[in-house]
View 1 (cartoon, rainbow, N blue to C red):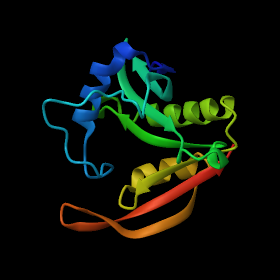
View 2 (spheres, rainbow, N blue to C red):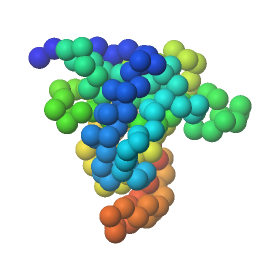
View 3 (spheres, helix red, strand yellow):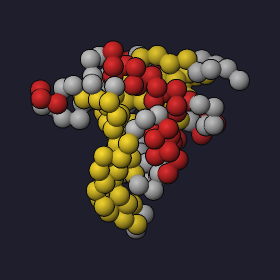
View 4 (spheres, one colour):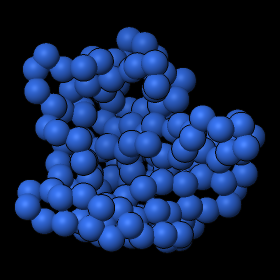
Length: 162
């Protein structure tokens, strides 16, 4: 089984990443409404290509992870936050998510970060297990923070030192 190649996104990846966001959308991990046409561009003022790492298999993007700052405050600039992670359904079970998390950790470290954090929905046990296996620990829980499909869901804050 070939290993995915991980690289920093390019502006030309926008359409493929927009499609990936559309086909992977689920209330298992998303709190935003389901994407509807016309679709917003993947890249924006808030998230540039340089903030996104993509995983490719056979020349096709099969996953991504977005890195950002948790706040715009200078006193918080030593922290990076995973602000999105998706893997195409037909590429699941091949270590893509793990490879993206590891690449995000290394990228955050190379950009001078001392910590990396993320938020994950409480009912997303597979993602939580993956994050825990990569050294993330639960640092806080916001009980019933979201109402998704008629069910209240916790927002779990996780982080780790770099």
